[in-house]
Length: 356
Ligand SMILES: *Cc1c(COP(=O)(O)O)cnc(C)c1O
Image (cartoon, rainbow, N blue to C red):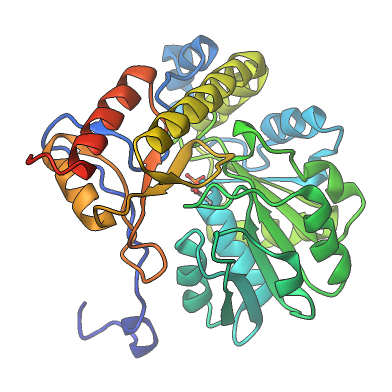
C-alpha cells in the first residue's frame, strides 16, 4: 500500500480468491467451476460477427438479456438487474442497505465475500453461528433487523435451507432486506425467484459462473421488485453503465436459450456428487449433505490443511478455509467422473496414512 491511500482503506482485508494457478495442469476442484463446456450456442454466439461490433458500446440497459431472464420467470424487465458477476451485485447490496453503520447479518460459515463487503461499506455486521452440523436455523435470525444475507445452498457447506424457512425469515422481517444468494441453486434446490412477486423486501441473486459454465464471462443477476432494482441501477449508473460487455451479453442470451443443455449437465453433476459422497463415506470421510456442486468433508485421521497440501502435491487442487470452524474440512468441487475417481483414490490414500 502506498502512503497516499486514505487511512480508512488501509485497514481493509481483501477477499482471498481460490487459486488459479498457471504453473502446471491440476485436477482443479477448488473454485466450483463447471467441468463441462458452455453450450455450443454460447460458443457460436461469441463469434466474429460479435467481434466486429466491439467498436460500439454495449446496450447499457442490457434490455434483451433482462427481458430473456424476466420471461423465464414470468417477471418483467424491471424486476431484473444484471452485473459483471454476482459479486458486483453483492457489493451494491451492502452499499445500498448496510453502509455507514447499517446492520448486516449473515452466517459465520458462509461465502467469505460478505464480510469483505460489510467492512468495505462500514456496516455494523454480525455473524450468526450455524448449527454444529453446519445447517442454518431460521430462528437465529428472528428479531435481527438489518440486511440479512443467506447463500442457499450455503457455501462452503452445501447446506440447503427449505423455502418455508426462508419465507419465515423474509416474512418475519418486513422492514429488512433479505438477500438469498442462489449461486448454486441449479444443482438441486428450489429457487426463491418466484417469491419476489410476493415480498417487497426480497432480493434473489444468481450467477452464470457455476451452473452455466461461464465463470470467465462474469455475469450475475438479481431478481426483486422494481423499487429495489432501481436502487441497484442507481449504483450501476454512478459507477459503470457499461458493466456488461458485448460478448458476455451475447453469451448470456445464448445460455438462456440453451436451458435444457444446462439442466442435463446439472443433473449429471448432482448424480456424480451423490456417488462421490457415498464412496467417500465408505472410506471413513465425514461428508455433509450438499445441494451444490461441491462437497464439504473431513476425515478423523487427517487435518483439512494436510489433506489440501498433500492433494495439491499430487496435482489435485481443492479449497481449504483456515478458520476455527472450517479448518478440519476441505471443499471439493464436483468435476467429471474421472476427476472424482482420481480425487477419491488420492484422498483415501492420504487419510489411510499412505506416504505421498
Ligand atoms: C461463486 C459465488 C459467487 C460469485 O459469483 P460471480 O458471479 O462469479 O461473481 C457469489 N456467491 C456465492 C455464494 C458464490 O459461491
